[in-house]
Length: 100
Image (cartoon, rainbow, N blue to C red; front, side):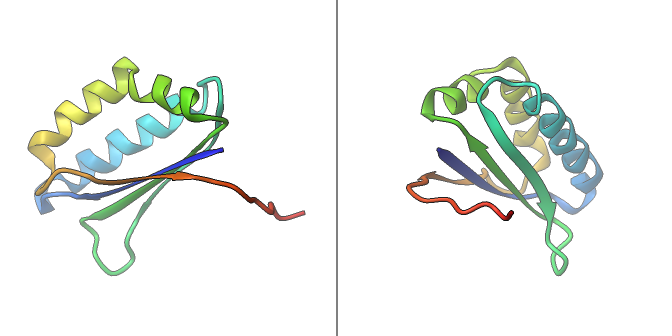
């Protein structure tokens, strides 16, 4: 399983737009083959700080997601909406224990 995380820092005036784009990405990702889970969240302490946590069956499913038109469009929009480029992390999950 492949896990991808991203930290996005929105410009204060862009928070509603970033939230909307992330919500749209989550909805579209839910229909992708190989997607296990996709979470978007905003910090309780910093309303401009967003996190995305995505889990995919394998690296290929994640690469397909990253190569999609909707991800490309979001990344282009983020250039004007974020105060800095997203900080991303790729993780190769070697053990998982889902709740019963």
